[in-house]
Length: 422
Image 1 (cartoon, rainbow, N blue to C red):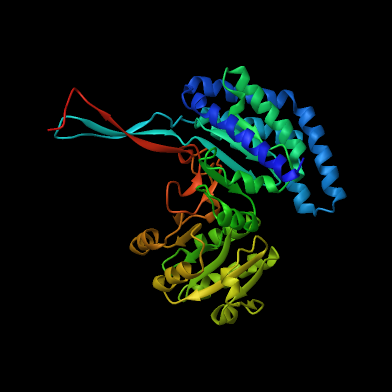
Image 2: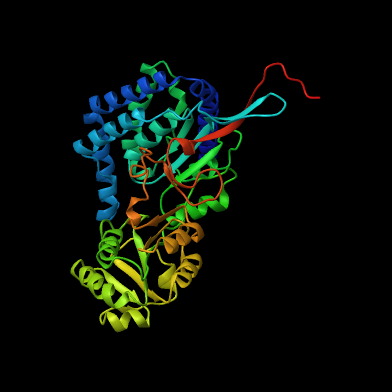
């Protein structure tokens, strides 16, 4: 049989099963969903040996194919990582259930009461790359928010993902919920992604988690709404009113706490008056941590070993020990720089002047905007959302870290007392 036809048939079968399971999961109560999550966590712990065995086979294949050390590290599961995975599922169970929550209840002159209710979206397709723990995180979030899901992990982690998905389905069955509510794409064929994002009759939302190339491709080809972000060109702006010590700590943490993450600072903007006080100290820290600085002329006058920054550097998400630096005249110039070069992910101001900080919070058009805090806080766990399915820089539906509430939508409900329209 033609391979393309096989993939198409496989995806449509998964879609039909997920679509049929979605209303059953949507009407499940919080207690049933929490029982399923507790059972999933138990299964992950009980089947740890099988998961590790499957992961070992995936790792062996990755090394055979010459994958680099960073890739292998993302793919690797350990007993500790499996325990963290199980604990993460339990944390989702402990979160408040958004489904059925009623808000904005208003009584109208006619006598009716108009309100909004949170409800599941339906079927969510989640496309991700080499981290197998995403299988458990994504499934847990979808189950708790009442959504069926179709999971398409990276081909390099297929064995690991299958083993984890088996734990998830066993947990659903133990709680009397439909196992079909969590589907795993069982082929490594890349054509599966193309099929998955062009089935609006089966899938209501696509959530991609991966590199820029993957997300750019999905954005071009998808026929289904997506929650996504392409780049994390995050800025920290040190205003002239900032406390110098605070500015140094935040710039250091935002860049060096972890390099290869989407909420790490990639560009440091510094007010021209405070620059002589903070830039040399920040440069000393970066130098000690082997972070390469690329700056404008004003930066290089203060930091002799900084390299000359190009226009392209200010658009770049480094995900590495490299940082772009620019000295700006004032708040207006900082906001204009972020508007031109930023990616609407996360941007922060360090300032003692409340009026300037509030202007920054209002006018910077990003999914997370911060005052006197590191950009590294732009994270579902840090925001109190529990596990996140990803970060959205889109303007509609959900923006910023997407947790349980971001996986639901709202509908109007009307509460009447026999009223008729005159």
